[in-house]
Image (cartoon, rainbow over all chains, first blue to last red; front, side):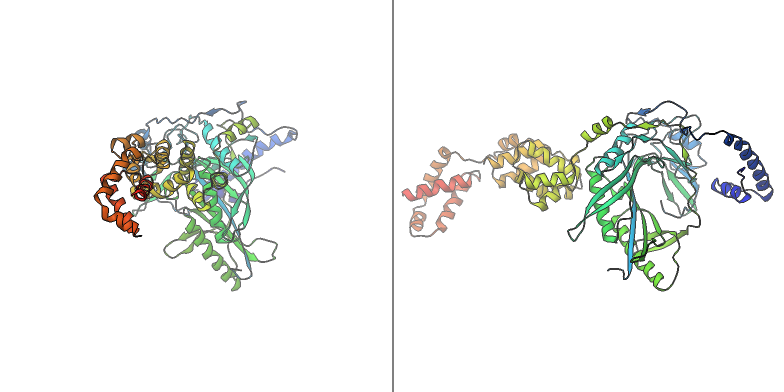
Length: 101
Length: 479
């Protein structure tokens, strides 16, 4: 009944997050995540079949903004926080996604 | 059949950038061509503590597209996060509507080359954010401009109803025109405002299951889409005939060789770990709101063409030209509304104005021409105030923003139709040319041409040729 996470799942999630772990770390996280999932399993003891899923915690609906442009001129600050810049562009190692942008 | 015993199945996911003033979730300006990263802020970068608020205008633009594609607008929408890591998006997720798309179950009636109309079903359409622009350098680095990131997109997902590259091409062209006439985008391909993800598979006729699907992403020209599909049809059929098994993969179209190249084989489905966006409020769309958006939806190109042909008696081909862009069709409508003869106004727009736009590489709305001034010139021609020859100069003037009647008067371009002025000239010319009168009486029509020439010279080209001709004939017969 208790949903557990496999070592392969952990490796997969890590790769999606662009994280690389050694074998020992993978074991450690598998154990930890299993514990966390087991803890959350407690929730499944409650019958929620008649409860609407919660998608938003605020009661606000249609909180929208008029289509008005406002440039906050934050380019310099944002670029200063980027790894490296070149001629106002953000310089990053090339990652080929499998498709041209 | 173009492809032996195989049936081709094509589905298209088309992304269109909507020309709002601001981005989908932040007030950063949406403006093509600005200096890199000029239009980006902390919300676009999803800095900790920022709170995005969705753009009502972007939603309403999406609703326009939904209405134009006959889709059902969802009464309740919430946003989802699609998670992925790539430098074109510093948020590391795209805000989209995966669970509750804005519109579902639409269709587009596509006119095919053989004259038939094919109904292509629209599975769904939704509003989401565009990514930034990555330029891969030769130095192993990429250079990122985030001006585009966060621009509202509408993604239109067709059902796999298309069965040939030509059908896909026709669908794209006509989808583009429908979108143009909603006024939400100019859908300029060269600026990447409209891009297609293309899915194609083939299967033997009669087979129950679809064949293995190949996907090509972000193709930004309709010709490329068609060429890529032509190549894939052949490649897949050849592989199947050779007994090979096709693999599900992403391929890329290569224009120089007009072929497709495998990018990556999909072993597992993309894992985007969608989850509900907690920072944005859900949206309820009432019928009143839909009605309000519908009331502001410009008339479609098809509606306008029908009106031009049936009511204004414009040739169908000319009606096609006038509805190439929303700006041109709007301009034409306003010119006719200002009282211009529909046929003459159409001829000027299709001929002289289009030639001017081609020559100057300007868009109609960038010129100084106004519907009122074009209508004014057409009226001056219609009532005989200026000749079509004089109109050439007036046309140049109205392209420079001049008012036609004032310009014509100021420059002596007004035709002389007054017989009180013309008659003395006729008398004078006839008195000076007795030989021509004799020739005319002897049956030599050439003499009339000579006399008209003399009179036009006398009037400095300003005499109304129709009136002058009548007057001359009348006087000649009395001699």
